Length: 103
Image (tube, rainbow, N blue to C red; front, top):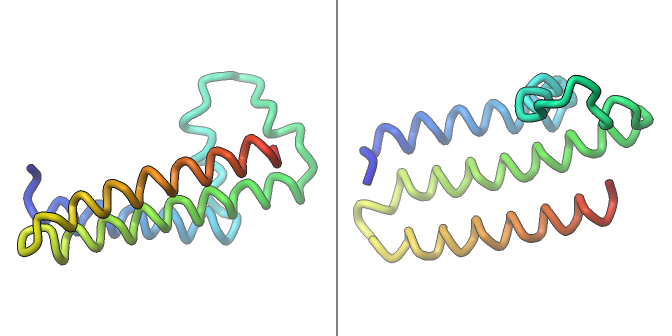
């Protein structure tokens, strides 16, 4: 669908965002996707904010690994795309359940 270079670029961008979120410096990425002026996440204790940032960092890291696998193997082995799609869906379900339970 997209060229292989797009997969590489997206994998690098997701990896950088993942590292920033995991070390706690990427809160501005989380603020970009919330249209509310009064973000309820800002009222959380700092420990809870840091935990949420790490969870989102792990999630983004999983997406970066999936994109890396797509860049490496999708052209040679087309069935890898199906496996990565299943991996992404399972990762999303696990992350959303964890966030719903803990936040």
